Structure formats: structure tokens, C-alpha cells
Image (cartoon, rainbow, N blue to C red; front, side):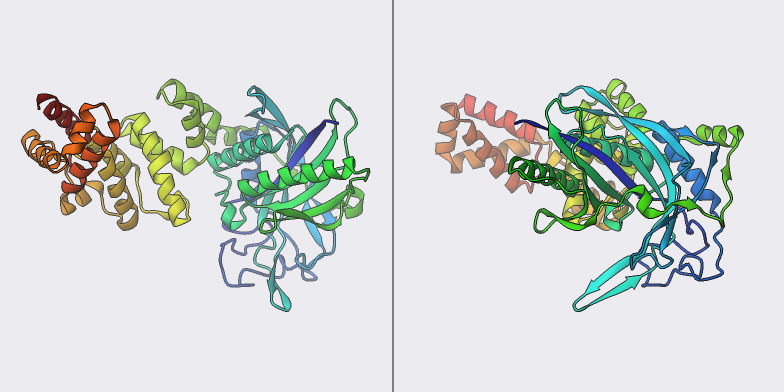
Length: 476
């Protein structure tokens, strides 16, 4: 029997406000445990919440970025559940009247065609605390309590891990470009919950779904989906029934682990929060925010492909991160070739970031550095190999490319006489390689080029080296 997978995502995104949603405590990441707390975010008796206006603005921006209807009136509800990281035993959220509804994101489906993924709702809520597990004990860090979140709930419109990843990446990019969150997954700024079920192919009846909580990387998202759909199919094929439950993904063991039976809305005993008035927005307020919105990734994608001439893959990758996009655009505006900039960022820079285990915000690099390196490579001042070395030194030291090239004497050697002498010397020392080149063996030419580059400490113009080798071999 063939099966189809049905997937919906709930994306929790921490908003980039300086203070929490209902109090003035800092949202700073990495503070000492329980430093950023007060009676309000700890839910102590008598403490009253006051809504942070910036949270509403950011939620509206997120709704606009994700093509939602913005409701002029929304209300806060209490979502009741008992868990150690929730001191007051309820979470202030929005259930009956969320601030945004009926949005969508367009992705590339698994069949290669465009596919619209519906967004059911976006609502504001507060984050819970964090449990810190030590050997033999569990401690509670309340710093995250009250940090403002939006939860973006999709329709169950995705049918596999590839579609879910594409959707998640596009939502993350939209939120980042809108300026509502840094979306740093390593800091928990954005987290994914996956609702997944399987059903016989062609069936209109949905299967029993499970929910996988708090996935914090695209890699984990894909692996968890691929594992869970196989697990559910295996259960059904063996004559069993899938149980509706909440799971966690164990990345080390590459498997899902049951946490608790899956709750439904009535289990949370939602009711309007008596301490918070409705949020009422005017048309003028919403229109002012719309007027402030920057270009979104889909718009930039068209500019990159149609105006800058980038291929679809490069344009898509450059629009996944706002800082990377700005780095690229500003370098091009500074006069550097668009395709060369894209290649330097997506290949050389990304390799450095992966090596250092950080994102673009963690390195010393400006668009002028990228533009300078591309221009120096294009005009023959340095070659591609040297450009990679200089980029690494710029990231490491913060010095300009020009200063590094000058200080370390890395200017490309373009002197035909000098290179010819070195090539002749290498050919004289390696007569068999010269004979192999004459016989049409291309690897031999690569060997000679490598030797010349080594003798010139990588500074010779590779194209000129190849040209001179060809001329000398033919003349002998």
C-alpha cells in the first residue's frame, strides 16, 4: 500500500524587542540564570501585566510579511497547563481572536511546481522558562519567561520533508527581512513544531497525527519528519494504530521519543485573560506599518534573477538571510560584479562561517570588503586563490583587503618574462610532464601549473601560466 504524508507546522518566533511582552525585564540572551525576572513574568500574586506596544507592531509586521489579514481587534486568553518551566501555571496567549489570520507562503513543491501553503493564524504569546538538566537534578532558569513570541500556524498543506523545509526557510526569511526577529536558531529565537500524519494514497480521511516539539534547526526538521513518517507507516503496516501524542526529537539517537498524550484545545481550558484589555488597531495604524515594510525576499529574488542575472539557486540562497542579502546588494551597488559577489559570498564566505560555527553577524566583514576583493580579482591585482586567503584574513583581523594585500605582498604576478622563466625551469626539471602534455594528457599540465604556483607562492596569474606553458611546449 502506498501512503501520503500530511504535514502542518507551528513556528514559534521570539520577537526582537528589548523588553518582555508584559513587563520591563530585559530579553537579553545569555544573561546569568534568573537575572532578568520580576514579579510579573514570574506570575507572583498581585502582579499585573502591561502589554508592550512594540510586540503588537512586530506581530502586525509579521502578518503583513506573510500575507495575512490583520484584525483590528484581538484579545488575550489564558492557556492553562502545569509544567515546571511555567511558574504561574498558565500562558498568556491568543486563541479566540488572534491578531492575524488567513495568510500564505509560496514554495517550490516536490514536483517542481509552485505551491501555496496556507497560514491559518498568527498569534501573540509569552515564552516559557527553561529547564536545565544536571546530573541528578533539574534547575529552572526563568529568564525566558515572558519573552514575546508569535506563533505561526500553517494549514496541513505540506506533503514531505522537502516542502516543510522550504516553507520553514521562507517563513524565517520573511520574519528576518521584516525586522521582527533575528531568527537565530542556535539561540532558540525560532523553533518548529511538526504535526504529521500519514494516510493511504488517495484517501480523503486524515490519519492520526503526532506533534514533534521544539526542533531548532532545518537539519533536525528534515530528519525528524523523515523518521516519523516511516515510523507511522511501519506501525500501520504491522496492523497497529498510531497514537495521538506529543513527541520530542532525539538528534543523537535519530528517533522520536514520546513525551505525553497530545492535548486538544479544551484540555487547556482557554478563557479570556481578565487582566488585559482587547488590542484595538486603526486603519491608519496598520497602513503606517505597511508603509514602513522593506522589500521582502520574493521581490528581491526577482530583482536578483531578472536585473542582476543570477541563477535561481543563488538568488534563493541570497534571500534566505537579511544580512547576507544586504551584504550582496551593497557590494553590487559599490560597483562589483553581481555573479562574482554571489559566488564569493555563497562559496568562500559560507565555508568560513561554517568553519567558525557562526553566522554573518559574528564576523568582521563589510560590503566594501567584498566589493574590493571582487574588483581586485577582476582587474588582475590578485587571483582567486589569493582572494580566498585574503577574505579569511579580513574575517579574522578586520583589516581591509587592500591593507592585507599590500602588507603581505600578495599582488598577482603578471610579468610575462618572470613567469616564462619559472615555467621553463619547471619544465626542465620535469621533462616527462612536458612529454605527457604533448601527448594530450591534461593532468600533466595541471602538475606544471601547480609547481609554478608553488614557486610564486600562489601569486602568478593562473590564466597566464597556462598560456605560457602551452606556448613553450608547442615551440619545443
